[in-house]
Length: 53
Image (cartoon, rainbow, N blue to C red; front, top):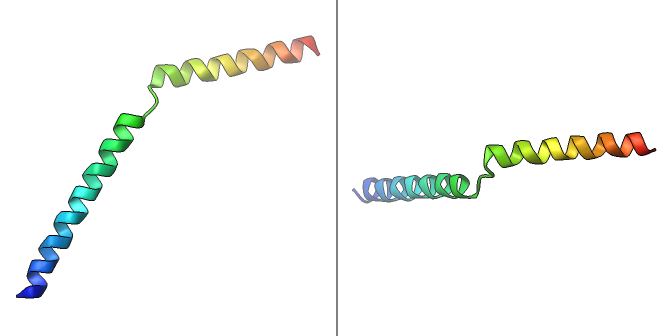
């Protein structure tokens, strides 16, 4: 009886932790467009650096 209650409590805690983790990842995710712009800027800077050397 007690084992079934603890199993349900642990399962509920696990689900809350998973949802919390997913929410944090969604909120802190870098937007795709910003990531593309950053990558393009890096490549552009490297090409200019190689041309000047």
